[in-house]
Length: 285
Ligand SMILES: NC(=O)C1=CN([C@@H]2O[C@H](COP(=O)(O)OP(=O)(O)OC[C@H]3O[C@@H](n4cnc5c(N)ncnc54)[C@H](OP(=O)(O)O)[C@@H]3O)[C@@H](O)[C@H]2O)C=CC1
Ligand SMILES: Cc1cn([C@H]2C[C@H](O)[C@@H](COP(=O)(O)OP(=O)(O)O[C@H]3O[C@@H](C)C(=O)[C@@H](O)[C@H]3O)O2)c(=O)[nH]c1=O
Ligand SMILES: [Mg+2]
Image (cartoon, rainbow, N blue to C red; front, side, top):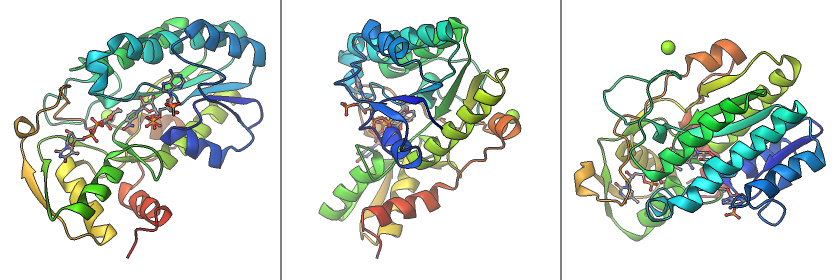
């Protein structure tokens, strides 16, 4: 698509968007620092794009606990300002949110309208961003996803590959369940949605999108080691045995029926995405 403006250039999703939509304009911090929401909105007014994807965010979950002010600027105030500018110009805006807006109780998959209840600062600021975008009232869609991984940037897969090559045993939480999601699949979904929204402006709302099948972080780690050919034993532990500054939801399962119904987009099998990432990293046996 021409005229696509992307906030973010170095992140996991931004880099996959760059591969799939090389003609789009990608804004790094140098062109749009999201700690300055007014300046970010000015970029939209100057460029007048045909569609906007916001792939930038404050994603350091634990750091956000002691730096909620910055997280809130980047994850809430800046998306709000961008959404207001987009609504003013009649430009569709696509945004990404997270399973961490939920409290993680129960064990069933959550729909888009399930009650939110973030357990930490990152989730709180991401939820505030969602609400502000909806309130701006333009053409918008928010993809709520989870457990993103890719060959680039910081993610659980890369952490496991590093630790798994240094140790022969690692303890990983087995009581947090969710859907690992390849960044490439998110980029593909966003591009398909933005085309559909540009064609049919009536589509808007929150859409859940996560890789399948749902697993625990421990099972995910085992699959990483198995597929990468690393001999590292994964010991199942409970969340209480792995203390972190931020609390994380135990149940991150997302019901992804709606995006299938409205856009024909299905949950990707993360195991195939994992093989692709390992290939990219030349880690495959
Ligand atoms: N990672 C995950 O597991 C999940 C992510 N999400 C959401 O998906 C989206 C994409 O995440 P992902 O690709 O993983 O993110 P990454 O952590 O890989 O990258 C974050 C991006 O945001 C940019 N950024 C951070 N702060 C600023 C700032 N002040 N001004 C401008 N740019 C900034 C970073 O730029 P720089 O390199 O300069 O720091 C980087 O490009 C986010 O909305 C995130 O909340 C949802 C669920 C799970
Ligand atoms: C490194 C490590 C982590 N863990 C646990 C901690 C945590 O509960 C889980 C995942 O750890 P991480 O720090 O990689 O995950 P985290 O940064 O919380 O990942 C989240 O990032 C944000 C941006 C999102 O939006 C979420 O969807 C989710 O992907 O694994 C272990 O049990 N053992 C370990 O050795
Ligand atoms: Mg359903």
